[in-house]
Amino acid sequence: MIETFCLIILGYLIAVFQSSAGVFFQVGLIRLDAIPALICWYSLRQPLPLGMVAVAVLGLFVSVFSTIPMYVFPLSYVLGFLTIRYIISNVLELYPWQIYLLVGFLSLEIIVVQLAGSGNTELVWPWGLFQSGLNAISAPVFFFFFNKIEAILKKMKRKKRDITNE
Amino acid sequence: MPQKKTKSAKKKIIIVVCLLLFLSVLGVVTVRFSGSNIALPAVMMLKDTGDRLQQFLFVPLSRIKTLWESYCDLRETKEENEVLKARLAQLQSEITSYREALIENRRLRQLLDIKRHQNDKTLLAHIVGCDIAPWRAVVTIDRGKKDGLLPDMPVLSQGGVIGRVIETSLSYSKVMLITDYQSRIAALVQRNRARGLLVGQGRKGCSLEYVEKGVDVEIGDTIITSGMDAVFPKGLLLGEVVSVKASDQSNLFQEIKVRPFSDVGKAEEVLILLSTGLSTSDEKDSLSR
Image 1 (tube, rainbow over the protein chains, first blue to last red):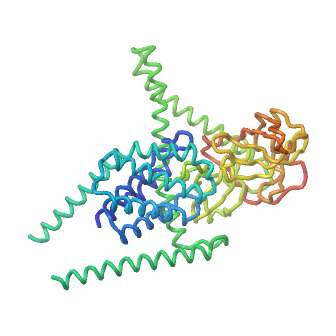
Image 2 (cartoon, rainbow over the protein chains, first blue to last red):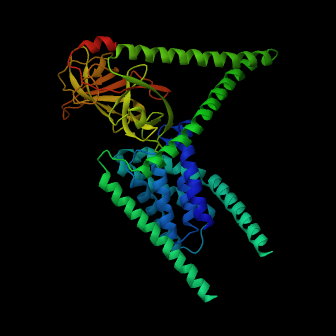
Image 3 (tube, rainbow over the protein chains, first blue to last red):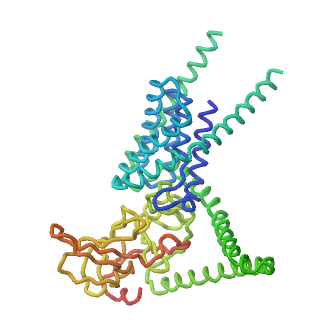
């Protein structure tokens, strides 16, 4: 449940930040994007069906900050989530570099769906690929932050439980 | 113990079913009302909250950006004169604030000038955010339905047309800039009245399409709105032709690149035309000049 909480609250805050400060981190048509990394991080932890619903809810929240049709964000995030769940169900263990590669792949999938949904498929090359590359490269930093936040929340929860037990 | 487990499992199932139901209802309602101009109060509230948060972050971040730029300026001077560094820093910050005020003053004067020449009712708005998708040239402005804004209202900046309103919530609106890939504006070449369609090309600016090969279009020609799209009044400034290519034989039309007059990437304030009655006279051409 902590992961779900992290996903929705963090995802919304990231969307607010990116839509207000996004242009400062933009080069051409690419910019720093933490949401694909967050979805990948969450997908590796949370199985169906709650995971899928949570990702769809995040998509609805994020779509508020865009003029792309409302269904596109939930659809792209759910597809990304399902892909990651499928991949990890067929893999015994993922090395960190493979996880970051997965972020790149997931980003590409999300971007393709979003570009198709907004009628700009011609931008997949080169901007879509560059954006997924950037997302994969920046993923270790974002994963570090998400893990830290998760650890803090777990610690808080443990403390609360200890107090209740006492 | 097993009873407890069953209870919690039931609870989870109920939560998931409720969420699915909520999403389905939301989906159905969205599809039902898409296309019509009816906005759901919950969606509108959500958009308003998001935009408010955007504005809350955008203003301090812009200040930080200005400060950062001042710092960069200062660093260059520092190498030249180490002794005057402290004094220069003080002066620089003062100059930055004066310059900021001067630039703002100039911008507002230009907007006021457009407003004076425009017969229609106008409204000033500030840009407070951008679209989360980097390929969309869409900005959020701090005016909404309560200020009388409606979709398809033209938006101007110092140079001329900058875009049009595409979505409104109670206090905020989204403006599609003329460089957006989805943007299409009916335009004409001011010199010879040749008609075309101004299409957004993202960071490359715009292009004037569907102008036949025989038509005389030159570099430096001014492009204005033709009023044929029933969105923009006739005669508003759009941009300047920067390149003309006849393209290959299979293509019937010329390839014309247009640089918008409005500084799309740097605009901070915009003017919205509230009444968009289409003019048939050419008077507005000269007035908007």
